[in-house]
Length: 325
Image (cartoon, rainbow, N blue to C red; front, side, top):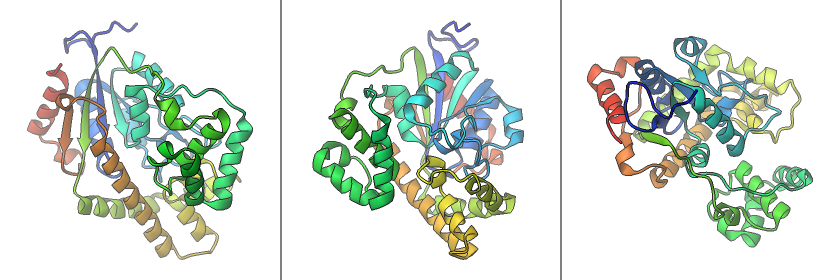
């Protein structure tokens, strides 16, 4: 039964830790180390790691890591069940209520914002509209649909990258289904997270370090069986508009499996789109005030692994988490 206190750490509210940052910055290794020190539960806040079909290509924690400390919300949905911020917020709150100190780990800023700031209560609408939006993305492409969205809902469109097909389709379906743009609904009252003393650790490593890490990690993924993993996923004959079918590496390795490109070219393309995505992630986190400055600790380095965690380094982070607020 939740008491509203974290035994042994004092304070009137339970502690919530967020380890955020771009892909390949070392979030999982740091979250694992913190969970070991604080008797915590590592909770997934990455949109693609929610799905069970791609453990390797989405860099989900290893089986050994999941045994070492409790983990939650990893691999809990099938690819045919698209995850979204509203579902994740509900699932995260349920896990947080019973878990050891929750340590949210991920780079999907939209999920973290939904948890902390609440989420727009968009009215239900005919699901035919959703199918229409997905079909339009496939037919004319994300940039063209973004242009259409700009004409009818410039406030929302102005906040989206013209290549972000998933969010553009979502914005289009909301406008078509409700008669108001997503930006309108986002101004409606929301239920912000209360009752938690939140601390956020943001990894913001130098760009060259991230680029090297992405290249090294993708090579390791290939050795671990990423190609077979993608082959198994594609053999399911799923709708290509599903989020997991657009995960970094899936379209590129799919092209290789169909004989449309070489493995070297596919790997280069996958690494490039991943690196470009980290730029958007880093920009987003730098400009979003998810927590007060006093509750934010920024690390301007990439976390290589547990060997990097000196006693003084871990003590500094633990003190930041438990001694503030």
